[in-house]
Image (cartoon, rainbow, N blue to C red; front, side, top):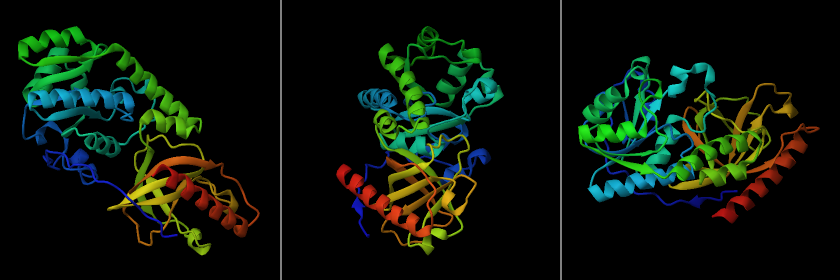
Length: 343
């Protein structure tokens, strides 16, 4: 079962600007491309066309906004930027009202945005101090003085500054004072983005992976570090990578068996993944275990990303390991069939 699928590499991002000195993000710095910047102190150039927001999921609606940023940047011959915050602003301002389940970890979000062509992802630590900035202070200190924004792409419902007091009209007024342009995203497009984000979370929680992937415009990813498990899989001929999801607020789909893919260098490998408690061996804790078809390599302590392509079946308890082994072989065959059809 050494089937491998070649993948095409996208053009590398134009700007490689990162310095990993910020202690808050020192570990994350090792996980993403060098065109991700953590903290204003590490920004070494100014003058961007940017948009800002959480962009959780980087779904089709977000992609339209980012394409608008790219078009504007091209017309002005300027680099493009997504300004985003970590942790989520609501977790600081209104922690009791915030839904903690998110679609993307910081590294997943950044990689997706860069792959779309955005030059720089700037991640700012959202603090209580920043939450107290008035709308004018936020624009002047962060967007103008620190980033040197030349053009900002936002929606009609954009809010910024203390208590979200800043509105689109305020930003337009401030743009004249600080000499940058504002480009408005269509109202319908903004409304669709909000609806899509909610629908994606609902679809994933309800086990509707196909619907979620359609709204996202790509396969839902699970990323984490490969850790040691009980190594039972190798005893029945199906060794698995036990994946520890490092983003505690990441939305994990329901228990079950999934077909997926993972990229290793220049090769894409098919994957059969189980999310669940392993009832056949009387497991109790929830785990994510991936059998990577055709890969014979030590992955311990490496970070990998599995893209979920399709839901295969619910997790269930088998009479014995032989019955489980036979079912895994069927899962493997079905996964290969599904993945080959999508190539």
